Image (tube, rainbow, N blue to C red):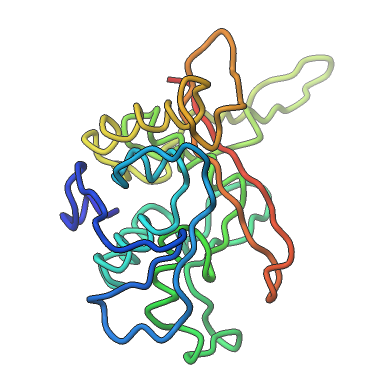
Length: 237
């Protein structure tokens, strides 16, 4: 999103002040909330650029570029790649969210901090594993997000015979969701995240017989963030 909106170049490096793994944003307005914390990493790779941000799942890097984009640019991009859209699928699938709406929304809980948290997948972001997997397919599908399906074909019985009356093949849900430039930039970085040769968060994946690229994530659940759900999504390169 940050690259494709022209907010940063692929070689952007974070240069803010980090103290004991905490960063208080400056230059984005009056920051009245707690400092943003990143996970503790041993043997952290430096500098804090895009590759190392991905490698260590660094909240600070992604909070910074989300704030640089601002809500309008960032959320317009997210909606363009399927967030807050009803996903086409034979079974009922929950619609992903960026921020709460309707009776569940409370404006006092939406602020600069919320945008920063959205940048690293927290805040009010929700998404199903199915949709996330489909979105990652864009990296291996020329930038297009495919429509997942369960049913390959429907048959009609006539005596002892079965005749196909409808068949379902590959269908694109969102075309050109990701640019080829982004794919070329990000794929090598995502390979390193799950490679045992790098100190990435997914290095213990140890896929054998093929090369994969991917990303880990941790979703904090409940209002007090007392539960965590670990994610990893990968694709074959």
